[in-house]
Amino acid sequence: MSKSLDTSTTEAEQTVTEVIDGIVETTPDVRRAVADHRGQSNSVNPSGDDQLAADLRADELFEQRLLGIDGVATYASEERAEVKATDGRLHVAMDPLDGSSNLEPNSGMGTIFGVYSERPPTVGTNLLAAGFVIYGPITSMVVARKGGVSEYILEDGDKRMVDDDVTVPDDPTVFGFGGGIDSWTDEFAAYAEEIRHELKLRYGGAMVADINQILTYGGVFSYPELESRPEGKLRLQFEGQPMAYILESAGGRSSNGEQSLLEVEPDELHERTPLYLGNDDLIDRLESNID
Ligand code: AHG
Ligand code: MN
Ligand code: MN
Ligand code: MN
Image (cartoon, rainbow, N blue to C red):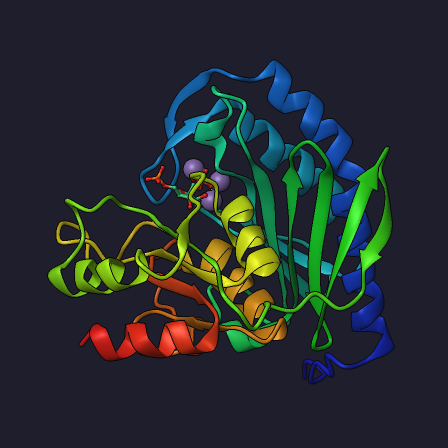
């Protein structure tokens, strides 16, 4: 009889800490890898996106490091079809390199992760922690766990905390919407038309950097449903749920147009979802626009 998983145990918390530190220790190798792997890989990932050599190399580096942690039972990533299993209790899901199309112009990129109490695909309320790294002018990390959000600066595989209470500012000032105006539904285009007169456009094409702007300045980020792809572009397990956990832990909101991204019951590991993240009143208005 498998013992029921009491995820509040110190053992589970210890594993979460080891996963976070394992990711921190891997980031210098990832930074070096992206510099040496700027080409295509001639393969596509399970959700159908082209894979860069850097996507695959970052995925290998994180898988090796994180599956080596005793308390980690599985490793799942947007770059691989199957979940990799070993002994352990907690489950790591990663977008090993987010915004990798920005590698060519050397613009913002990062890593997104979630630590789940159940094997993915699983609902976002099973998250115990989530976070992201930005390989920017500074290598920084945002971590949400136990209801709080902290920011760290990463140097040489170590982290030092620079903010122990990251919260979405009450007065929103920026927005970033993916997909492009010609692809939006009429409802989203109408919402965007309202928002663009109230907030400043800041969109860099890497979710980690665009979300970090929402945490810094307040506002709304969306990769919405599109006329041609009602499911949107971004992946629920690897991007949507971890970022929703972070935003909601920081006092903001998440939505797929109808409900919190943390409450969506996933059908499959690589499913995509429309996503809207930011200040609660901006998300409320969006949900009343999108029927
Ligand atoms: P990834 O590089 O992991 O595939 O993610 C890219 C995603 C996300 O980071 C970003 O918000 C979005 O793609 C940008 O899409 P467009 O380039 O279509 O704007
Ligand atoms: Mn990709
Ligand atoms: Mn991504
Ligand atoms: Mn990616």
